[in-house]
Amino acid sequence: MENTKLYIETPVFTGRNVPINELAKAIGKDAQYIRIGLQQGVLNFGYAMKKDNSSEYNYYCPDKKVWEETGYFNG
Image (cartoon, rainbow, N blue to C red; front, side, top):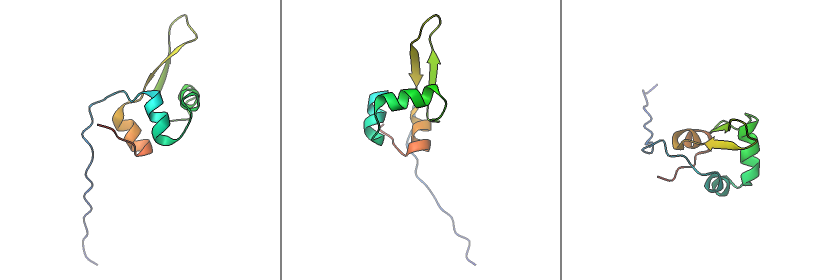
């Protein structure tokens, strides 16, 4: 059998935080669906961090993690 190599070109990642609304549009889901999924740990392409003494969350969805999990990249 022949020795085969596969080369994959990957995007240049910067650590950019992909906005929830942009991500929702790209994967065809509602922004609230993504927020809740991140809060519950069901979605693995970002992080939901609850603000101290608040019911609000901050979200961080790094471009590399989004690409690895969804295939979406916008450099």
